[in-house]
Image 1 (cartoon, rainbow, N blue to C red):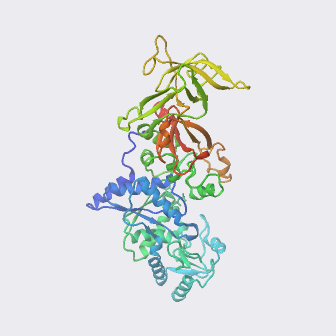
Image 2 (cartoon, helix red, strand yellow):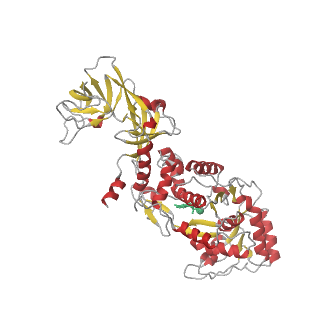
Image 3 (spheres, protein in one colour):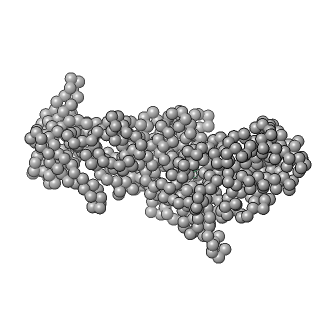
Length: 559
Ligand code: ATP
Ligand code: MG
């Protein structure tokens, strides 16, 4: 897919536009309905972009509702993180955030309603037996022996379940639909389970909790959601959601439309697996910059605009596909190319003495902070007799096409002069530890007389450089589909080199970098000042967002 035609309207837009046209106008209400049991990941960002984007486009509203039916797995901390992430992505939900738990009374009343209508019953089968009775994809299920309890008995048992008279697992409330239905979701699904757990919002008011399927659609109806946009795995649940809408006195009838989940290669986006990475200490928390969480990507240096752009580039489809992670890199790279400050930073310092500059020499060279953006101002580079360059920019015995520094060769110091390497001082093992170079003082902003100097390298004043810790990140997984194999543990595909920490030296302008300031370290890549950490000896920490080379854009041009 090319970037140019990517913002073409997707099938959701088209479908809703047609509906609204047929209805002669009106608007829509959508919602983003996370379960607060983990941090949001890049797939959720897609869902947010879809739901808030549709509402915005049609002049409607988008609610934020926590589908909090599973108190043991949920946490206030996740609620806070989810709200922060959505705000950071640039979206504002309609009014206050909502909670399915606020509707527990209504949901319970509807459960009683179904019982009274003879459409729900309390079942005493244990989980194992109930599974056996459910049948399989090829065999119908069987009715539970408790299916024909009287309305009075069911109402009484349900109320006693609610107040905690029975232990967990002793009973459930089930809808009475059809145990022979080809759709297993309709084989008398569970509506309520006994759980003697406190709830982060509802406190200790309940000893039973509604199943997600019983809460989700009805919560949409209560909120007057017009379009329940969700991912394809809920397609099989739609008949059940519609059964609830048909059999309950709900105030509205949301329409469910499914689209394909966004999956990215070299990445897992399942909260269960992400939680495993956190709990096992493979990464340092949900917002580790290697995590595909919104908070992790933020810390890595991704911008909200780049994530929205990725959503736009990858579109909305009815069938699943896998997004190439290079597309994500491309989205952030093109943003930072335009908007990140430029700076020089030496990763592996090698000392260079500029022998024809006097001791104490200090020359300030003023250069722009971005080559194409006057509005971003300038920065001051002090040039002193001793500077650092990167070890990789020097070779004692270079191959032919090495245009950087070598004995008796010349190179340009970026934004400054041409220098020549006159002498190499090595350690006992023969590794260079210091270079003695002379400066051609007639080359500031111009070519040297009578010869061509091709190479340009970055450098930092040894007197004024700022010690920094640089964290270079790589993909967390070596396999492009780490969770493809059901038999094999996805953790076996971990990249042991997903994090490399180096102690570097940055130019002085980096000293005041506020958390989350983004830079292009010239010739290296894009980096972001960490939000939280300080490195060794209190150093500033910079996270590598992405390297400079754009594999994806190149492949697009060729293709
Ligand atoms: P996970 O499978 O990662 O645990 P989930 O679906 O259980 O995700 P929810 O908190 O229920 O997580 O998700 C909130 C919304 O985000 C749902 O509407 C869901 O369909 C959507 N969503 C989740 N993952 C993706 C994805 N990869 N692409 C697009 N939408 C997604
Ligand atoms: Mg879910």
